[in-house]
Amino acid sequence: PTWVSTDADGVPHPHTLTGRHADILVLLGRHPEGVSADHLAMLLDDNDLDAVTIRAEMSRLRRVIGAEYVASRPYRLLAPVDGDVTDVFDALHRGDVRAALSAYSGELLPQSVSPAIARLRTELSTALRAAVLSTGNVALLRRWLTLPEGRDDRGGWQLLHDAAGADPVT
Image (cartoon, rainbow, N blue to C red):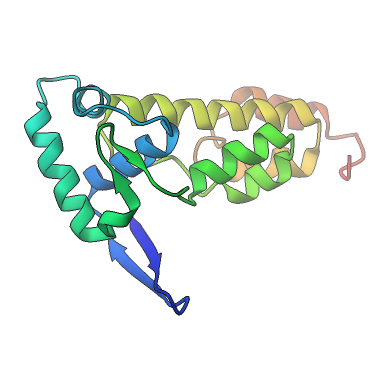
């Protein structure tokens, strides 16, 4: 995963993130009210991840992306973070399934073992699937079925089969 900051002249600067840092940024983005170190530890790991470890991770994250992006007590983002997950959820909330499907680049952080990221990954994929299937739009359905999550989507393939005689531009 990559974080891109922009300097005062508008020049982008990419920073490579660890998997844990990517998890943290996504979780902070989903909790704009902020989270305590203990709560973040629980979101990141079902086991006994302690607050000291979280504080150390947050210190390292600030060194990578800049201290001006993350506040503490509680931990929270100081500015919105653009990312696929936000773009997809925003498009779904607007009812723009085409934009949501276009913004979807695949499973959210597929290497993450964080329980909260796993739940969010499932929520994102499930919400997108439901939105696509509910449109009745054959073109969107075909796009969904080309994604790794859609390839074995029996219900989606059945809908496509049933629509085979319908106007493909629907």
